Image (cartoon, rainbow, N blue to C red):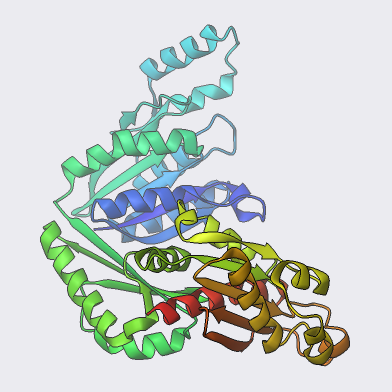
Length: 417
C-alpha cells in the first residue's frame, strides 16, 4: 500500500516554517510496511486544498492530513476532505459538550468559531485529542471499488505525535494486511555520487522489490534500502542479500553498514585497537574535535585537541618550529607534519592529527600569499611514521572546513584498516 501526506498551512510555504510532521508520520507508516509515495504542502485555500485532497485520494491507498483542524477561518481541512470524499459535515453534540466543559474549566467564554472543531465528516471515527481541542478523524471507505483510508490529524506536533502513535497506528495495524519493512543504510565518504551509482546500479536494479535511494551531501554518499514483505524474515533476507552484494562491490569505501556516522566508526576502530588520538586544528577551528566529542564516551579513545590558529599558538601548543613558517608558510605539508607530531608528543597519544589550510574567503599572507583558497594539508602521526596529504577543497568557508574534517576522519579510518 502507498500513502500520501498532505500538510495544510500557508506558513509552510514561507521561509520561516517547515513541515516536520511528515517525517514523523513517514517513519510510523514505514514501520507498518506502508510506503509514502507523495507529500504535498497546501496553503490555506479551500479550492487548492480540495483539489489536492481529490488527487491524493485517487492515487494513494492512505491519505493523512496534518493541520487545518483549528477554529479559525483559515482552518479548512475538514471542509476540503469532506468535499473531496463527496460527504457532508455534521456537528457532533458530544464533542460540543466536551469543548464547552474545557472552556468552562478555564473560566473562559468559548468563542463561536470553536464550534467548527466539532464538525465531523459523515461516517468518520472521532479520534480524541488528549492534548488539544481539535479531534482527529478516521475514515475507512470504498470509492469506485477501491479501499481508501483518510485520516485527519491536528497540526501541532505535541498533539499530532501522541494521537498518531497511540491511536492511529494501532488502528492501521489491525486493519491493514500484515507487511514488514526492513531497512538498511550504507554510508561512504568522499566518493562521487555518479561513481557509486555506476558501480551499484547494475546490482540494485536486479532487486525491483527493494526500494533503493542514493543521497549525496555533507561529503558522503548514503545508500538507503527499503523492502516490505509479508514476513519480517522475507524482507530482511532481501535487504541482506542486496546490501551484501553492494558491500562486496564497494569494499572499504563503505565505512558504515548500519547507519553509524564516520566519527563513530573512527572511534570504534580506535577503541578496538586500544589507541588514543589527539588533534591540532588550525583552519577547522575545533570542528574535528566537536564531531568526535559529539559521540558518547568518546573520551575512551579521544584525548583532546587544541585550536592553534596563529603561528604563535602553533609553536606554543604543538611545538611547531618558527622557522617553518618563514620557509614554507603556515599552510604547508611541513607545518601539518609538525602539528601532528607535536600534539601527539604533547598529549602522549598513539596518534596525532594536524590540520592547516586556507578556508577563505580572504587569502593567505607572507609565504602563503599565492596559495589558493581551499588548500588544506592534513598529517597523521603514528610515532615513527607520519603521513601528509594535500587536498584542494572547493566551496565556501563552511564547506572547506567541514570537508577538511571529513578528510581527516577518513584518513584515520583508512590508515587503521
